[in-house]
Amino acid sequence: TRLFKALGLTGSFAPKLQLNSLGMPEDRARHREALVQYFESHHSQLDEDSQRRLGSNPLRILDSKNPEMAELIGNAPQLPEFLGDHAKHFQQRLLKSLDDQGIAFELNPRLVRGLDYYNLTVFEWVTDRLGAQATVCGGGRYDSLVERMGGKPAAATGFAIGAERLIFLVQEAQGLASPQAPDAYLIHFGQGACEPAFKLAEQLRDRGLKVVFDPGQTSAKSQMKKADSSGAGLALLIGEDESLAGEVTVKPLRGQGDQATMPVSQLLATMDRREQDHA
Image (cartoon, rainbow, N blue to C red; front, side, top):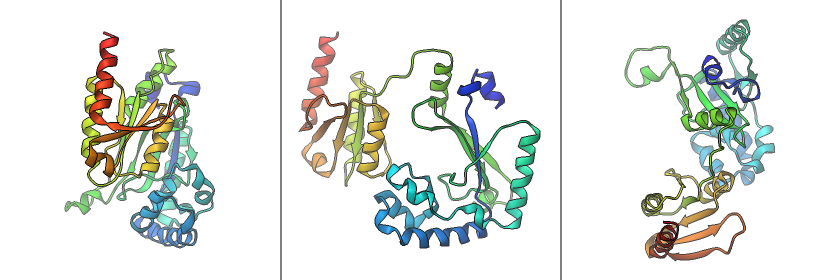
């Protein structure tokens, strides 16, 4: 909170602290078992990402941003119901400390972090000033991490700050120009599509376009949702077929034309002509 105040993020611009306790490993094991039973009984309602996570890390399903799954997730077993005495006592001490320091917080039983070595407290500072609720800072405790890597047991905590989001938030608080939406969001899916998609993203950036590229392995549906919420004018899709043919599918996202598939060279030539026209 001291950092946010120093940056001028006060009042409605101040990120809000959300907390949850992931408990100890034995607490999470009981919760995991309950989650698996619950989500398996509603398997047909899970999206593709959640079906994959069910077998590997069902806790991550609770972190889904898919609005179609909001009700299902809202009715899922909550971790606080499975916390043991140690985790409960630790949480009570932490909350008292925050109260004593006058730091406002909100308990969010659905808050999880993306790495499975977290234990006890996890936290995020979030804001709704950047459109959809965005995490500005997030982290937590990982007391077993050093031991898992071969060292001696050591208490540990850490966090990461989203520098770009923090900059955007400071700009808005200071009345500066809002960040521009990207020109295009590049979506890849299928075998062999990631590399040519990344190459195209760099070629378009060389031509002055703002392009978002997700190097992960999320589904095309998930990437498309992110593309739509990003405000990008175009979605550029490269799947296995496009990759083999050296093509790209151009999908307008703001109603400015029809979807079309074309050679990558044709798209780049079009961008080159546009650049020359504006020179």
